[in-house]
Image 1 (cartoon, rainbow, N blue to C red):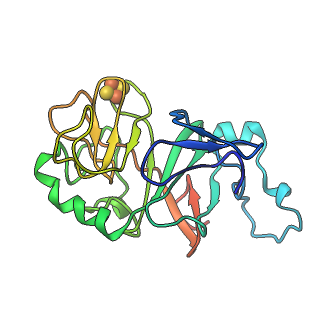
Image 2 (cartoon, rainbow, N blue to C red):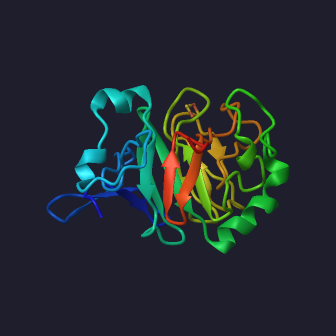
Image 3 (cartoon, rainbow, N blue to C red):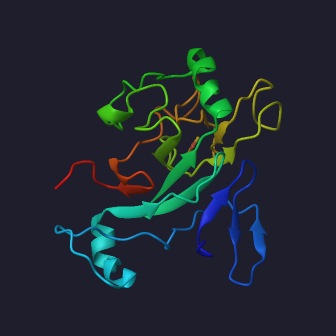
Length: 214
Ligand code: FES
C-alpha cells in the first residue's frame, strides 16, 4: 500500500508514514497515488505504470482516476483525489449494509430525490451505489464544505445519539450521515453527500469521474 493511502477500519483515520509509523487521528485526507491514473481515449497497453499518471493540469481539469480496490477489506475505507476533492471508497460489511434500512425514517432525503447534488441513476437506491458492498462518495459536507469524520463504531459516543449505527459526523456544525452518505434530519447540511460519476472497469478496478464507456 502506498504510504499516502488513507485506510480506516472503523475508528480514527490514520496515515501510514514513510518511516512505518502511524499518524493516528488525522482528519485530513490524503490522495491515494498507488493505482491511480488518468484514462486515455484509446486502450493502449503501456509498459510503465507511470505513463498513466496524469499531468497536474489534467488532474485539475478532472481527468478520471482509476483505483485498484482489490486489497480493500470489509469495513475499510480508502480516499482518493478527484478534481481536487476527497472521494471515499468504502467496503461495507453485511452488518453495515443492514443499518441502511433501519435509519431510513431518520433521514432528510432517504431516496436521494433532492437535486442540489444529483445522485446518478445507478446509485439512486438504498445503498447509493452500483454494488451494494462498495460505496463511492465525495467526502465533503453539503453545509459549508468540511470533510466529515468516520464514525463507524456503533452505540453511544460524544456528539452522536445513543442508538448510533455507524456513519459520519461533520465536526464543523454536527451534521451526521449514514453509511450511504445520507444526511440525517434536522441537521445544518441540507443534502446527502455527492456520489461522483463512476463505473467498474473490472471487478476490482473502479474509474472515478466517468460512467460511460468511450
Ligand atoms: S460544514 Fe458540515 S455541518 Fe457545517
